[in-house]
Image (cartoon, rainbow, N blue to C red; front, side):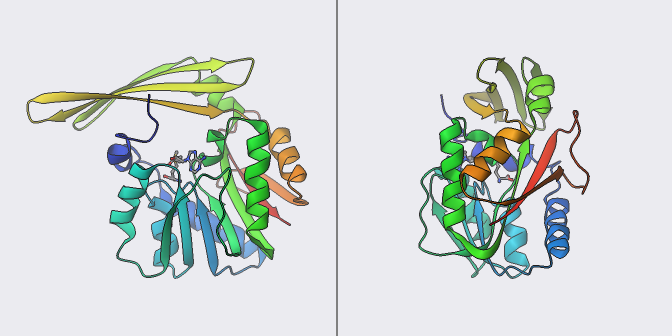
Length: 245
Ligand SMILES: C[S@@+](CC[C@H](N)C(=O)[O-])C[C@H]1O[C@@H](n2cnc3c(N)ncnc32)[C@H](O)[C@@H]1O
């Protein structure tokens, strides 16, 4: 079963309630607090480029990549009007771009898709290699609480205009893996076309993330409940990590 294949073409419709502008403004607040003004930015797991668009609109020199060709195809249609973006297909576990960046960023769960701990350490090592000495790495994760208590072992049925979809989720307590089986029915003319996707996300604890960052050589690590500057609590659903060498 696929991940981010046919779904890519409906992703933006189903993400309509995600406020990427607010997300971008939060990142600007982080940068202001750090007193840094990055110019060269690498966005990893950029998906369909919803956050990338804000980076482009605000004059950053942007490189972005994702693993899914279908997500990138939608991103390309959205971003090809800009002259300040390079779009690549890369796997964040192995990526190699012959350039260093002032900021590396990943938005909305990309890191949860890295399900093996050693791969997570590798992702962070790759990021460190691509960061300038005074660069900043910003990413968020869906919390263990969200994947275990809210998403895991639950079924959701949703309808959005012509798209009807069901997610059946299973949480593996041994490996802390949340498996999402999503069945979409998309109305085309008088018929509904069905397709299925399978997404696998890992529920990491804060300690696991911090230890992986340390193993990759990062020393300056901070984290907050997303969109705030408060420490996360037991019921935080998303948290942001702000990391420097
Ligand atoms: C929830 S989407 C987020 C997309 C985008 N950042 C956004 O905010 O809309 C997660 C993305 O991670 C990408 N992804 C998953 N594993 C990846 C990997 N190993 N390397 C690069 N991208 C990956 C998926 O293809 C998908 O586009």
